Image (cartoon, rainbow, N blue to C red; front, side, top):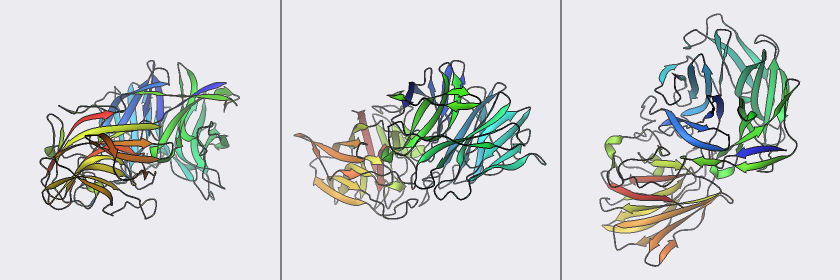
Length: 482
């Protein structure tokens, strides 16, 4: 019986290596900054935050949430992590820029040197072999392209071919490439879906040479009893704990959760145990409480690249607005952190004394279909408010609706403590405000939903935005996870 490890947190598209006694995992961070988060573990069960790869990318107006622009559902996708001749390499595509970036460093803690690889390589994987470098990428048609010596683009006249084809798949064709050279053969791991319904399935193709035929098929169609959506898309790693493949599972509003699965090599093929026990990973430094008094802990990420001229950490986290927003999605300097499932609550105190009429400041379970509890100011009076959004457009379409105000309660003060409870057993968020009688619910439990408009799991988020005139300020103190 094998022991599998399950992450109860949104950590999509993992790629993992083993180096000097530790496993290192890099994950997609999309529109969040700093980006390119790296986790570390000595045993595959206990993981900790280790570092970020970049603070910013191009500082475009969209990446900075200027005007009505944004990069939700875009940004940094599907990184590849490799170690070669004393150097670590992390490469990924950026969907808003239509570019591919390569970062390299002699230490996973950084600093990182950046260059671009000419071209756009979807869900790609790096391979170093025989003094040459290659990138494998694509969806349905999987390409292998040789790179030039300085890794800035394709090698002129170099190897460039389609190596696997999944044409005709009506759901999801092969993608999410992870390629390795093992004992002189080339192993390519990918995800696709069953053709009759959406379900993640891991596939593997093998060739004796890079210009030879890649042959293979599905190797893992299992949900390990966790959730009936399959587990796939990830790479293999050999370390102190043996051979493992680290994939992930679509898990509703919490996002995409990695699963570590052991295997053995038999006749050049991974063999998985028929019976497994699943244990929860211990995740440290990936979320938590923070008084925000003179800075923030490493698990916080801004929703887009922040404008630090509008932010202070002085007795708490303050945000000043510099534009009028239609809704929370355009709120600059929103500070977020991932949520640990299956049930988690966050509480924060908001000082709204410097808000202006039409301003809203609060805590949310933040994704396309959000739930928000906070304080607002109208006609000089302070009110507690609960707002929510249920998207009406296609799964890729970001809502431009103002949000539904479910309840307002008049306050006799300018400070309010709010709480949001997320239950991913039923994908709901419930909001509360503190009164003299304790915490009371405001609004109704709201259904959360993983959509491709954000393409991320729900996060706890601190936001302040103006709907009438800019220049107001909110101060957040004593953020606590319960």
